[in-house]
Amino acid sequence: QVQLVESGGGLVQAGDSLRLSCLATGRPLFNNYAMAWFRQAPGKEREFVATINWNGGVTHYADSVKDRFTISRNNAEATVFLQMGAMKSEDTATYYCAARFDWNRDYENSHSYNYWGQGTQVTVSS
Image 1 (cartoon, one colour):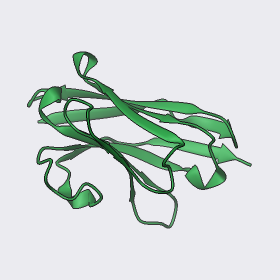
Image 2 (cartoon, helix red, strand yellow; image 1 turned 180 degrees about the horizontal axis):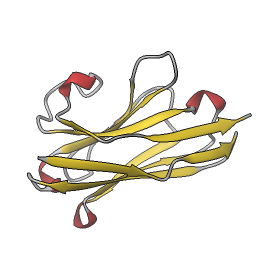
Image 3 (cartoon, helix red, strand yellow; image 1 turned 120 degrees about the vertical axis):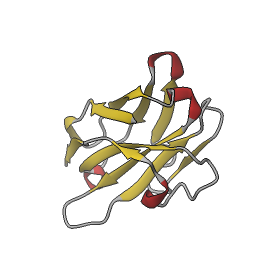
Image 4 (cartoon, helix red, strand yellow; image 1 turned 90 degrees about the vertical axis):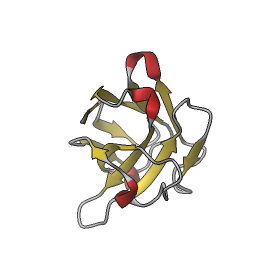
């Protein structure tokens, strides 16, 4: 069982930066699976943001955040990060981290993920 806890959300202004963190505990060990960030705005479906493989060597991003957001991980600290920059009002959402045990599953599909955090709210004011 894996437990995921996000932190770092808050209220920022358009153009600002913010870093989210997600701490993983439990088994299997953190360096055995891929991680991702999703987000969900009110009245909208949950959408893929970014994913990273077990050692940080491979990443993928949604077009809407490419070149603005960076996903990274520290396996020694069992933590995945999402550095968000040049933020826009449309980035306002609850952000969730998720663990994916099978790297070959569709990383954009939320059903490919085995565990989820409880979410952290990010609000961008324009």
